Amino acid sequence: MLFNSFVFLLAFLPAALILHGLVARAAPAWRLPLLVGLSFVFYGWWDVRFVPLLAGSIVANWCVARAYRRWPGRWLIPAAIAANLGLLGLFKYLDFFADLANLIPGLEAPRLGLALPLGISFFTFHHIMYLADLRAGRAPSFGLVKYALYIAYFPQVLAGPLVRWSEIMHQFDEAPYARPDAAERFARGLMLLTVGLAKKVFLGDPLAQYVNPVFQAAAAGKAVTVVEAWQATLGFTFQIYFDFSGYTDMALGIALLFGLVLPQNFDVPYRATSLQDFWRRWHMTLSRFLRDYLYIPMGGNRRGLPRQIGALAATMTLGGLWHGAGLTFLAWGGLHGLGLGAGLLARRARIAIPAPLGWLLTSLFVALTWVLFRATSFEAALLIFKGLFGLAPRGVGFKWRTIAVAALVATVGPTAWAAVHRLPPRRLLAFGFALLFVIVLLKIGDDANYEFIYFQF
Image (cartoon, rainbow, N blue to C red; front, side, top):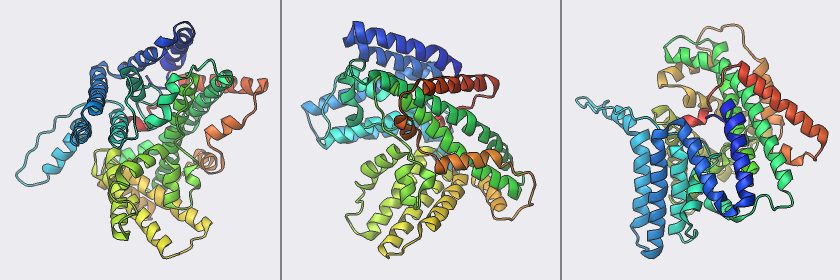
């Protein structure tokens, strides 16, 4: 069920909150098992066939962690991480590698067409973070219920944020309604949920109407005009931001309703003045994962400049592949790796770029590379690029109003987390958010309900 659906907002979430409140007060020992059960109900709503996969991965990795505490061998954790990556590769990349193999004359690798379990990239990375920290001596062992909740907690199981065990495990032991700020936390959770819904419904989804037809035409091999190319590129630049950051705001808000604080994932990324700055602000939990579990183990900045640039390029290319099983995603990630390497060389050469120019160059680079992220093939991306660089008919009718509003909010406005936590408790404010929530519900009922972009990863 989508966060922006009636069945979630008007049925599952209220029922879950009522059950959680009753159990937390009457039988606190059952609160965590209840949250685990609710998380599996939420996950199974999408496709019950994959519930055993999620449950099996939790039990298997928990057993590995328990075994490692008793028999700490060198091979157990690496083997478990390899198994997790192998399972991810089976569902997500098997057909991709089959397509690559079929490019070799004489080979006919079969495509299995396996359905992609929702959230598999995210819960796989959660397993890897915990196992890697366990092997490094940074993580303790946990009971099965706590570990299951860490992996399957429903606000973040499908599309993050990527939560480290150290950020949330200690919160499971807290009594959420015994805190002096419990009511304020609940209220701010509702506000975050409402703001995230509004971003998705009023900005992200309308931009999809400007973006999808153009990229679909390019995928079909049709010519794309200059106006259409810029409309689709700028539209997607802000669509993916409001879609994904809106989802994250909802996830953080829903978690707060149950007394848990998840890490922020966005910090006004389109205000960045360098590519390095952009990745410190965009999908921040993924950036931390790539830094700590790929870039640093590859050598990071400790083994000379050539090794550092190579580590940057490899890390971002693998990050691109994580987003999708396609050569365009590899190219997107690789270009960002090269861009980060170029920024590193500029800093080493002490080349000072004025902040306005840095912002302009970063914004253009990010927007142009989003084309590869969104296009279904290099051929489709090339048709968009031809339009962007004036190698196509000019066209007419640039739909700029929603894009302009989205650009203003994305670059000038604060993050939802910061805005919500700065607002003082006021009855008028509560009424305003309640009215906004009702308007969002009416909008959801009136228009097409788009799935979140990051659900496909």
